[in-house]
Image (cartoon, rainbow, N blue to C red; front, side):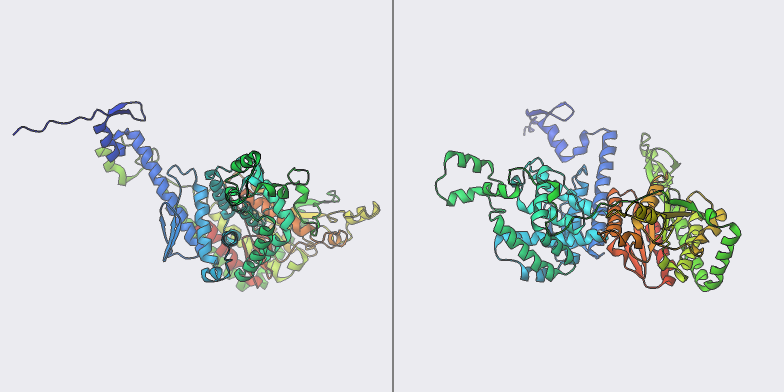
Length: 621
C-alpha cells in the first residue's frame, strides 16, 4: 500500500520579523507562540507575563482591602460581574498601559460591596429607565467616594477608569458638553464634589463645561449629596430629587436623538443633518443652549458656585515681618532643656516605660524587615544558589544573582509635626514630647531619619502684626493678623544624642499660644520635600482646628484658616509626594485629614502612634 505523500501548504505570509512562512510553520507558531522568539525575547516575554500576573494579584489584594473582606474571591474575565462569593474583573491589558484604570474599576466594584446595601438600593431605585441608570451611577459614585476618603490613591484610580471609558467611547476630544452623555459628566462632577476636588479631575473641554454647568446650576444638590454620603437611604432620596430636577431640564439625557426623529414629524434637510451628526450624543441639540451661556459661550470659572453660596476669601497674610523659624537652642539653654526633660520623666515614669517597651518592639520588627528583603533574577549581585542549576543547563542564562533591597531603614524620612497651641498645655504636650523623643531614638537606630517640629504663634491677639494693621487704619479683611513661630526641635540629620534635650523645648512656659495650621503644614512639607530619601512620611499631632483670635475677629470669612488648611492638605494629597496622616488628641481631625486617627486620652498617644508607624514602615513599607 503506497504511503501518503506529505502535503505542504502553499499559503505564505510574513511574520512580525518580515520572514515569509508557509501554513505549516504558521500552525506551529499558533500552537506555540514562543517558538518564533529568540532567547532574549522569551526572557522579555516571561518578565512581561510575570509583571502582568503580579499586577493582577496587586489589584485583587487592593480590592479585598477596599471591600474589607480578605476572603473575597477575585477572578478576571472579559466582563465585570458579581458572583455569590466575589467579583469578576476585566483587569489590565498585558502591556499594563491601562493599569490605573483597571485599579479604578476594581476599587469601584469593591467599594460597592463594602458600602452599598443592594436590597435597599433596589427598593429605592426609580422605575423609569433613564432615571434608574443615573440612580445606579450615583450610588456607585457614593461608594467609590467613601472608599476614596479612606484609601490613598483611589480617587486617582477612579478618574483613570472613567478616562479609559471615555477613550473607548471616542469622547476624549469632544469640545462641547452636548457631545458627551450626561451620565459621564455627572459621574465626574459628583465624584469630585464628594471627594472635595475643586477642579475637574478629567481635563477635557467637554468635561470642564459639564463641571461648570452642574456646579453652577445644581450646587445645592451636590452639597446635599456630600452631606449624606454616609447614609445610603438619605443619599438615595436626595439623588432621586436631583435626578428629577436634571431630567426636567434635560429630558433627553441618555436618549439617542434618532429615536426622537423616528417618532416625530417630518424634518427638513438641515435638521436631519444636525441630528445625524449628534446621533450618539446624550443631549439633544435644543438643550445645548442650556449648558452654554446666553451668548453661546461656555460658562466661565466665576459660575462654579451658585449665587446663594458666597465665594470664599482667598487666603491672605497681612505681614510676614515678624514670622520666625527657630530651634530649641534659640529658646533656652541646654541645662534648662534637661531640667524640663527630667521633670516630664518623673511625672510620667509609667508612661515612659510603656513608650520604651513599644518603641523597642517597633525597632525589632523594623530590623527584621530590613534583614529579610531580597530581590531575585538579577544580572548582577550575589550568586543565588537556587539558580545555579540553570547555569549548568543553559550557560547563557544570566539571571542568577540576587540583591538585598534597600528597605525603609535606608530610604525613608519621617517628620512629626506637633501642634504647640495653648490647648496642648499640661500632660498632653509632655506626653507628646516623651513619645517623640523615644520614637526618634527607635527609628534612628534603624537608619530612618526623623524630624520633630512644632508650630505656634509668637504672640496672642495684640501682637506686632495686629498693631501694624491698626496703625494702617484697620483695612477690611486683612487676612492673617498674627506672627507665626515654627520650631525645629530635631532635624532629620541631627543625631538624637545631640538633639535629645532639645525636643523638650516644647515644654517651655509661655511658648504655647495660637495655631495657624495651614502655613505650618506647608512649611514642614517644604522641608521634607528637600530631603533626598524617596519615601517621605509626615504625621501631624493636633488637638483641634486652626485658631487665631486676632485673625478670626477681624475677617468676615470665619473659615479663612480652616479653608487654608484644607487646601494645603488636598494639594499634598494630590501630589502624592508625601504620605500625610494625623492623630487627633481628644478631637476628630478627620474633617481635615483623609487619613486620621482619633484618641480620647493623651496617654494613648504613644501606643497609637507606634502602631501607626508599624503599619506604615513594617506592614506596608
